Length: 364
Image (cartoon, rainbow, N blue to C red):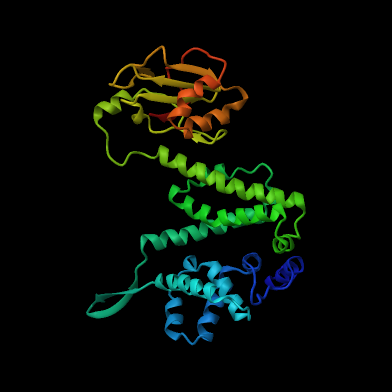
């Protein structure tokens, strides 16, 4: 299907391109931007900004814009430019904010660096680390957009595993969340059905399809947050540790990551000298808290934790509420941790030894 044919078919579902009139509501602006976001591409975005700069006779800004990478072209800015070019009566406040964001885009233009080669001055483009990350983030979002386009066929899809397979750096997690977070909020608002404009914009989707799309986008945001947190936990310490620490942990066995519960172990070195260690056994679905005997803290010997208080240390089964208790153990404060073991009924033998099924959740 050609791009023109695809545009015509999509316009039948979404209607004609919105043109804002004076006194428009924020909801109408959202619908207009959403229409552009669905119907137009990155190449269109560049064209709309170029048309705006040409119509404003801003030749210097146009030259500068030609040196801006596609990854730095904010789509929402381009869509506002399209609205202005198309005759929409955009408010002065919106135009002021639009110009501020456009200025940031122009400031990201690559600046030629002069170097001397055989006494002849030549120019060489220098791309910063931030620009490289922006380019890679744009490429990553484009890959994810392919997944979103076919969300209905991905019934057993796990975005968490998709990130793991590609070994995506945690630094790109923020870009994914910043991109899909607002989309998720808009979809949820459309699902609630309180905005007539959003109801019309998503009328091409059945109620079940809209619910399915909300779940898919929510999975992307949620799994990205969990993945980024887990990658930060498992990465190697930036500073080398003492040899004595390495010897203590040489024979220690533990599970680095569990895809079913989407959790990862913290660096085991953090257990040394801590007052509390919280662990989860993925095979037996038990949570263990080991509390130190004194101020020297918990230590490691072989595969076991030592120097702990037998009376206050416990292991209990989570039953069917494993994810609930894991979440409370990971995110709860001191009061929650103090009462957490009392919320579980079935106590079992104290698991002070770690093995290949043990996730180290947290230390205090």
